[in-house]
Image (cartoon, rainbow, N blue to C red):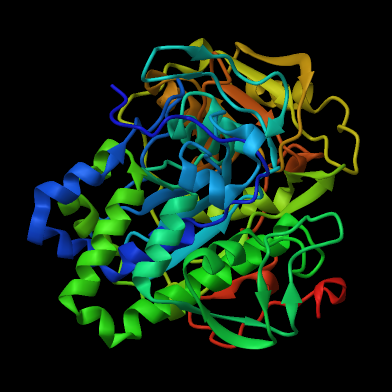
Length: 501
């Protein structure tokens, strides 16, 4: 089942941020060089199962041209499973222990291939890790007891559990994952020949206690490769406020610079350089079965390279601190929705015709026989739940002929928008019928394993009154001023004065 995965080694300091290298290799299409020795390169590629969780997320509906978006989870592992990884990663006492997913970036390629989004999740984001089953030995890892740091997901059976965790949190269907470790970053960076990066002052990432990546650069722009590239991607001490958020920003800058370098550097037309890069890239990767040979990687690279760097947007999931860790904010759900609905983060989508709401093929039961639970989800971060909302809306349904509608007072939820949930396909028509009777758009009818029957959750957008009015949609990127455009050649990391020389 599980394929040839590297052992699940490596613990230690959690500072790996290098999936950017993989993205750039794919965009340029260097995997195409693998056709020169196809079988050899196929033998390099390691693979593992895509999703180790029980719950699945439906694939997005194709657009009018029959195209669908592509979502790829990029994972950087802090594995200490080999002498080379141990040397590069340090923390000798952690040799051979399970790795963590210290880099997590979701790459979203639009259905029409006109734009791309890359979303980083900080490694210490608090999430609920679902139950996962290891594909190698069938060991079952129970769901986490409460929220834990997202980078622990890799220890619950492999990268497929990191995929499952992302899908549970975001509701985004993930098509593939690509994982790489310390040594993989160094070898590919060497093969590429250097990536230009910029700092606005001299930097030495090392404090008096020895904390830091060891990166040392003078002010200005410098091409970095090999171990120095790894230091850049690991640097936290010395960039801005020293947080993981600053490190993600530096990774985005490296990523966009590498994309431009690979597109523009004519020396990579050299067959030998292409061959070396293909060799290093395939040897460094662990992928899902959908990407486990050179042709599949080459086809993917052709899709990715269709996007002009001007239409690449890189951002970090909106978050807030909880002690020394972070959690997603309400704006994070807005960002996830934009991805789910394939809305470009740069706001430059062509104006789309209003999509017709698709009715279920499954007919609804007669209103009088259709059971509906109504829950109060009007609580917010700043407001207590509006009293009696479940009973009021249940009464509206009863008045309209839904005799079995009833308020569920056992739970009080927090839901930004009113939603109708249903557990299985045979109840989709029933759920849509309930929504239409109250003027709730069909886009707010969602399949969910969290409910056992048709369930209407009255959201914070309907705290009063008997007529539902859908709020105007806001399709803007939250924290847009913090996003990085793929064509921005002037981006430069700010150096913390405490780490300059």
